[in-house]
Image (tube, rainbow, N blue to C red; front, side):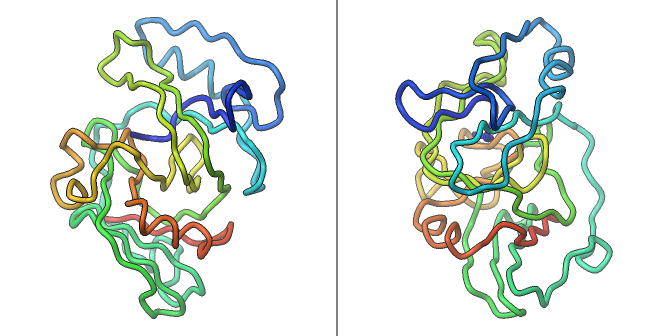
Length: 214
């Protein structure tokens, strides 16, 4: 699942949707139009870049069904020789973390389906949080709705609610090519297996480049 909506740092400690510093909730009128609902949400603040803060996780942008063109690492603005680089290949559904061009981690991942695509381009880790709960911004009647999900590790790589994160329900055998259209497909984020994320999370500081491409 994608990291969407409200985040909870612990039992009874809910923070408001899209507001890293707010102390009270926000009531949203989720009507039949997803676009109308998101237009209300976008007016709220983005999360604090502090990895230790119990920040609200922002909701992602509206789905974009049009496939994004391929972007080379040179034209994307990322550097293959960066001290910390996370490269995600959406064709092969895998992730490679490198340091100064040397491979540190490699793993299969799960991205979003065509109607809830994972964005492509050069991004960077904006914030990091652990032990949060994701809540669906969509009503239960929506095909995009999901039940509240505990997430052990999440790293925000693009404003609008796009994360590299763990999914407690996805088994290791489910990751890889084809998983983006399977039962564990994200809503635009990048699912990373728990065993790898336990190492990737402390390895990648805020500011780490994230290059996503086909």
